[in-house]
Image 1: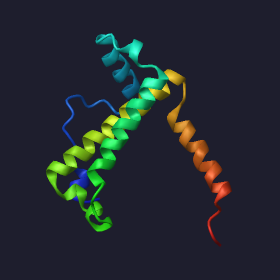
Image 2 (image 1 turned 135 degrees about the vertical axis):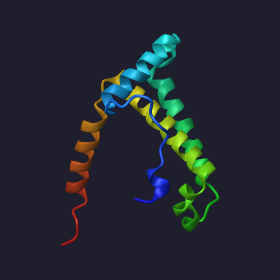
Image 3 (image 1 turned 90 degrees about the vertical axis):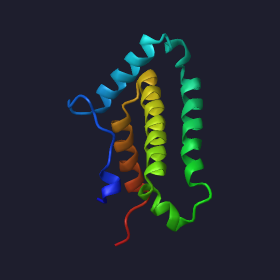
Image 4 (image 1 turned 60 degrees about the horizontal axis):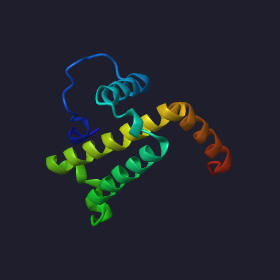
Amino acid sequence: MTREHQHQEPREDREPLDVARLQRRLAEFAAARDWQPYHTPKNLVAALSVEASELVEIFQWLTPEESMRVMADPDTAHRVRDEVADVLAYLLQLCDVLGVDPLAALDAKIDRNERRFPAPE
């Protein structure tokens, strides 16, 4: 892993991160601001799409080679991390609202893809 990939924002607490803990933090954040009425599946999917588009915008006019070096520029790297966080936040909130375990969903999808697309022998 390169130095650029290792740099992350410092965390004030040092409890281990996991999906459930992050979902609780997101829910508490929204509840403290009375945002839950707006966190419907439709609104969360729309917000997820917008944030994913903002991530795409960073890479939009880069060559494939430039896109591989995007984390080398500290300002761009910060933008990428922020947009990745926004995408993940909305995805985790959507999963929470719908009762979807995102890790189980991904695990099941990988299983299906391994059957659909077997590795060449």
